[in-house]
Length: 487
Image (cartoon, rainbow, N blue to C red; front, side):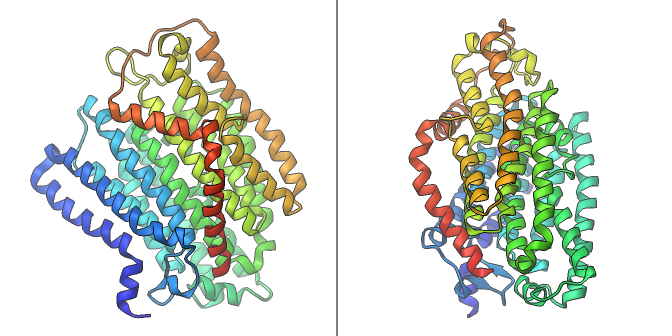
């Protein structure tokens, strides 16, 4: 392949890089007064990048023609599926964030740029087919995320969230890097294809430890138990738009990266890591469900909900099949839409002074004071619980179906039973909004952007979402096929 073809394959990353560098100069000259303009231009850059990756997904791009730079980068349908979710979540974050930061007089020009560079790093993560590319993308995303978590400089909770995220994130990166060094030392290559070839025979103890360390580092990035400890504190302390961003785009990127590493690099030794994934899946489901029950803060509850949902997604990975990978992608798409709807609704929970309302008790009787907002929030909770006819039911259904088809019937049964426990705290929120006496705390109103995004995402997770099942399923099948063709 020639250089021109390679540059065309990385056009989305080039677009984001050039846009980011130019907008850095705009931020330097215009200062914080140019923050809204920079936000709009960053959304435009993300939209352009999305248009550039969409053809690869629609055509089911796979094989050697999607590789660039001697196999270090792959722009296949699998990467395109993940990138569209990442760019969409980042764009929504940039649309809703200015109103939040303007109320606390903390909107700065660097916020949209940090989101843009984080999206750039995540794009590299999902296209990485080499340990070096993987680490570059991961750290580009992580460095932006550490600053975003502590973005409210005068807020102690935000500073604490940023510090915890930095310390634990650095620890996880060290674990991941140590695992990569072991894998390289015992295989002699950093290429996923090369690692798979060397590990095709009997795997030594040193290589096994490398695999375990790498999966442990990635488990931190997806907030899977037992590496979930940072999630509740960071979700609660970070500014709400940042929490929304953390719960969607980086989750997709880290999960897609985990899928590619497991299937492509370690696919020949699936038996060595399958039990680890099953353990992490079940532990995440149980800890996420039980941990959320006693929460009094809506953002902390969403953090445990995120841990719980990661467990269900990992069930698809445990199947080690194309059907399981497709189910994971379908789940991620529905989860992103549901989470965006949930956090936009949380952003609209404000008192008469415009201060955020995060206490669950303050949602009492919300259906009588803000009926449409309560309806949207109820739809989010039922969808996250997987209760039909909400679209979240379909996400869990396809994952459990893949597990049954892979003869993991016991895992599917335990997952279904545990999902009943998780439904308790989701239904509790609905009960508080519809059956408790009105607290009449939520009085704030949202702008047209918040209302439009909430309406669109709520419709997407409503029963109308089932009209998209064939379309989303077809794209997910195409993306999963590209992943397994590479493997």
